[in-house]
Length: 350
Ligand code: SF4
Ligand code: SF4
Image (tube, rainbow, N blue to C red; front, side, top):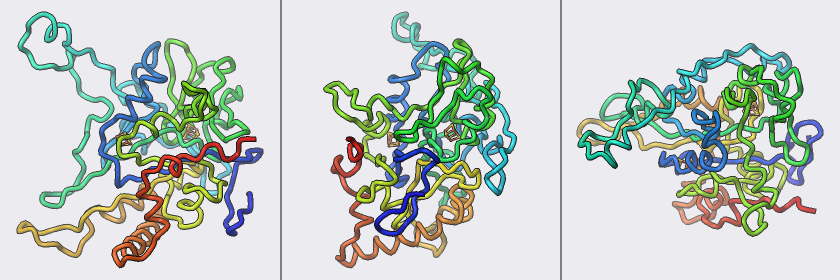
């Protein structure tokens, strides 16, 4: 624990001085997949990584990627002591990278529409925008996901060769490619299924939180936020340190408690947090508002745990303050377009 000036405790993993973290505001995600592609072109564009999406954006409610990952187990028991067994996803659960008929359409004069050449029956984002509910009150929202760089990572514990580790300076979880022998216990152990097996290299690989960028290896030697954050058109990701008391991450997570964890019951203590989604109330077929929430509260609780209720209540109160013309630090943080506020990565530089 590290005691902060405002009195809240921030739990950092043992031996970690500063934990880097991300807050994503789900109300801003338009499902454009720019983050997915930014990540893919940086890190996973070939060599056995074709099927991998270290960053993916799935539609909720939906099966996600890999398919039905929420039902595959992993993580810790209720006391957070014993690892619970998890399953290894099959390659079909990820979906094969399909070949498209580009050649024929672009160069051979075919008037076929552009489409996968082999029988495609599942893939990442297959159920995009399907959602749930009945007309006129159907609903869905987008859920961008990366490795959560957990405070209590079950992937690290699962590896018998200590190939996975949580690095001291910022709590980023990495795979030592020289130590890894491709046993895939980490893939089973991560309840978010955010470690991937590279069958060509025979090692596991995962999101590295773009650590070269945050270490200042950008084009001009500057510190940069991860690509998924910088490239996001509506700028819905904030990046910084959990223990930076002046930063939005600490304030949204620990002070106002409006940013919540995905599936806290897995007990890996993720360091990626979400501002839960709001939706307009339900309405009748004639278009009148009905006193009923469009996104069922119990579904949001299933995803984000009971803390989602207080988070939604607080945001609603803060929105009302702004409507009355009062000031709200929460709403200022959530609506800023100043990247200096969104990304605070240099605060602990010596
Ligand atoms: S999300 Fe999974 S892979 Fe990432 S640190 Fe947590 S347990 Fe490990
Ligand atoms: S780039 Fe931003 S808006 Fe687009 S899918 Fe990713 S998180 Fe959502």
